[in-house]
Image 1 (cartoon, rainbow, N blue to C red):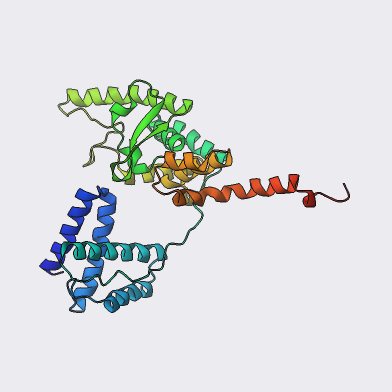
Image 2: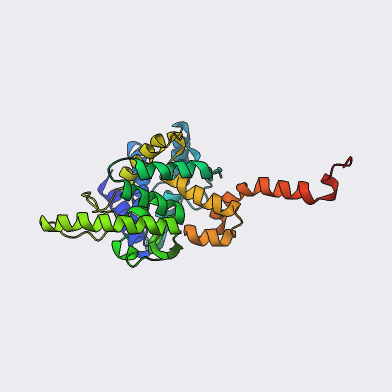
Length: 310
């Protein structure tokens, strides 16, 4: 990658962070995608300031030939389109070679979810499995009760949990804040974990370490439980709860939260707010759970669906 190419990517990422308050994970994804694109161009003696639409489309064909998933190819094109839109706005280029390129789109797949019984088994495993059962129970109860993203959960400040709150203030994508209500089991698990957490934190302070500002502190670089560690933990709990570990991820519980609420009659707009979705179309993917309920409604109430022999 040439110095000019590296400068383009670095400046673009800085602007995304400063102007759009893009999350750390979003910036890392942009960086990976644009570096792969830059490497492809460098190998062919091409560069950002002169690349053409045909050459960008050739890269997308190359990605397809590699067997990359549709969502991955769509994300890479999105990063490229945003880079060249930024370059055009900044006057680095007099044209935008990516503006008319249409990508593969994103397939709308039904999210994997868990049944209520499977969630109960997972929560039961959290209460009994491992040395940190109070912490594990609090993590799982909060995740299922609120539908938080795992990054939002592990980075919760302890100040948000003080005073037996009925609601939690969550910092979501792009720094957007939202309030999520806590169920009685989640509040009880939170209260139990706070007692234990504060005891451990006090011992750490006595040993000369600073007090943690996080609800789930750890010795990681960020100072809180990492997403990777939580991913491994939820797999362990799935095995302990005799649930297929392949279908259990932190995001599966977020899907279960939304699916179970909708199946229980919750309003789609309310679920959108609780999940922190910017667009209602993102939330609409959960409407698949209404199919059985609507089918039963028609069969029970439509005159033509009645058994003529009855």
